[in-house]
Length: 339
Image (tube, rainbow, N blue to C red; front, side, top):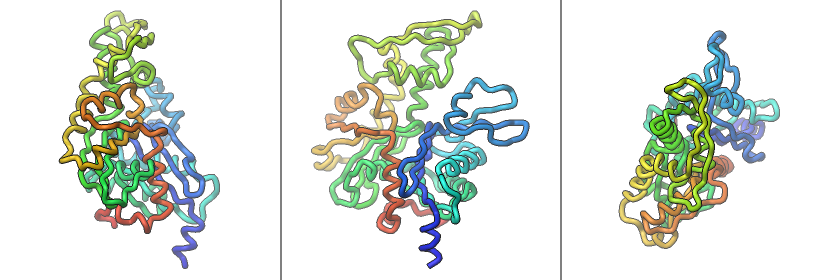
């Protein structure tokens, strides 16, 4: 009886705790929050100054006493305390009414996560106010979010390219049959762009500028006509602001190394079942939006590549569906030392 009342009075939550962005789904309300995984800390008081969009706007621009931090790296927690603060703030923001009970939380995590990293996620969520914490592998959550029949014996292959990781998995009968998790994602593309501009033009640009370049003119294949973008940075020789014009083909060359790592990971799964050859690979995550990446992967694998309509939302929507029926999806949840 108490358990039923607790579930009635709590706003249970599903979270895609990403390296770049955190998305929150509230049972009965859908996706209520989609903000950058960034926290600004006041070093004088050690308190949270800003979280999410407001904190991201401060990256590289804060006064001495305020530090903007991204507490997630490669899809896992790099700073336990800051992640806890960020989760607490996002959970608070996502709850419109005062809660009688602490919520149950489903969190999507990389499939290659270690037991220590699982414990860090659980502990952070519990300290941030969760009553119970359930973990689900990102590729399974993405597959459920897309609407793939994960409970059927026929294999479904998914590639989820996030900010810190690329998850590749073949899913059948509510489980991962084969998977590969590499710590390469959107962040590595941004870093490659920063390095290229520094090396080629002696120009220093920030993470946010690199991300804008990737979004506006980034491409995995040659485009004709070329896209162009004017970029402002600091000249490393003269120390003054300078503008340069970049082209899409330059950016393609700049990001070729991390892209080739993603291609190699996709080409290494075990024997592909006939149903995957027929059905192809479903592509989700923010990286799925990079121009020409689906075309490149198709050329390299000789398999159909299907990019979903809202690649950024698949993981949190899948975690939300699991939240709606935890009993039905119990077999696909990650069970560890806390369970």
